[in-house]
Amino acid sequence: MNKKTITIIMYLLMTIGSIFVLSGIGLIVFTDIYLTKGANGVMLIAVLIAGGLFLLLPSKIYLTLVLMQRNDEKQQASRLDAKSIPESVTSIL
Image (cartoon, rainbow, N blue to C red; front, side, top):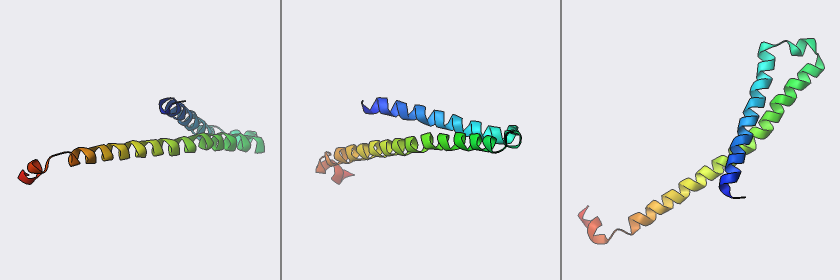
């Protein structure tokens, strides 16, 4: 797989993880499942939130590293461009 495919998969995992976390929080806020179902309701909410975080965090770390790598490559390219300017032009500036 190339980087673009992996990046798309990571964005998809991040979206699915966010949906899991938000659905778990929604169950806490808008329903009384933790009261009516007891321990099973609490376990369901905990599994949704934990599963969402499990999907969400690694994808964020990967995407952050990819963005940092792209930024470094752009900075190196701009430094190379600055070094390629002749000294006669830089002495005028």
